[in-house]
Image (cartoon, rainbow, N blue to C red; front, side, top):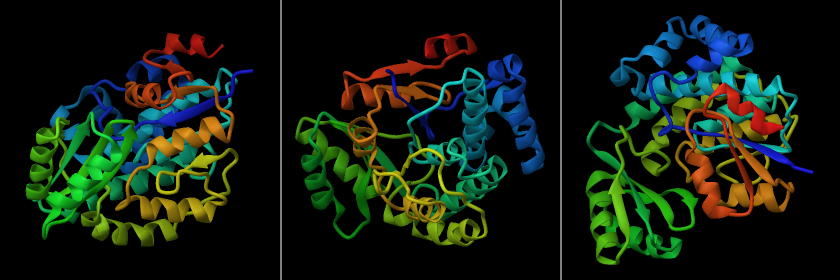
Length: 306
């Protein structure tokens, strides 16, 4: 019997037009965008579907836009009767995963991610921080590079996405030093086109700004296991899920271990990426090559769930 995990992408999977075909095909999906427009007080749906791209990619807009799109697709998936054995989201995607588990209301997820985006952008002046993906090196080799390149700057591992695929973040000068060291050691590094250095200690002000808002928000106990980024295991309660979201802001995304928990402990045999793109399925192919992978590019792809 196939046991599914629903996984929800974060930033990096966006595109103008995302979610529009799902909203046109399913009233349940359209209702998500209508709720987002009401909750946020502006036409997020129009921004998702028509752009302009430079406005959509502003992190304060993009974070709730991706939550709305992912949850809209989720509502379409739910019409098939498919139910997950576990859920997880990469970074921002954890908010959508918590909506899927019944832990967080959609309206609260939208408000929180709108504010989260603003706080993360304001935490570090534009140009002072950076992120880089380092491919083709072992995790320990990347950690050695981080220790060597940091100097007096902040530099740390931000995402453990797949074997041989690690992202580092921190002060721009330190990230650039890490890129040069990775090249010297036959890695394949590249700077990422991001507006801030996410998931590193420079995000501490954003975490501190978000914590009071999280404290004011109702979190229910998860109806299905939600594997959190910071612990790579399920949150035991709504309170634990809330606390994990706070720690997530300035801590690494432990995606490899999260996928391993779902296959090894929850018995998941196939993953469904619920959101625009297939970024997470590409990482899962490297982490667990034998696991099934179901991509939902267009509404007709729902037939693949049967």
